[in-house]
Image (cartoon, rainbow, N blue to C red; front, side, top):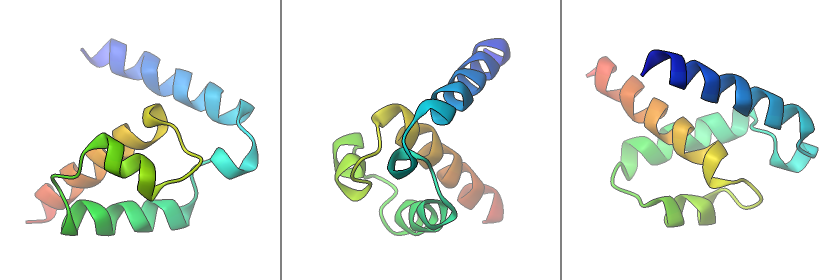
Length: 75
């Protein structure tokens, strides 16, 4: 599982380099994601796509999972 995850991360990084600026993930997006993960942890991927216009599911979903994991470790 770990190797696959690393491959996905490097693939995400490569894709991020090729994305136009509007689609790149920003600190503001990270902050927004932490708030959403805390207030609405059961949000669907379709709802997340609405929250982050111009971003793709492949970009959003791993960030959402990571934000939820970070919140769990803080509790």
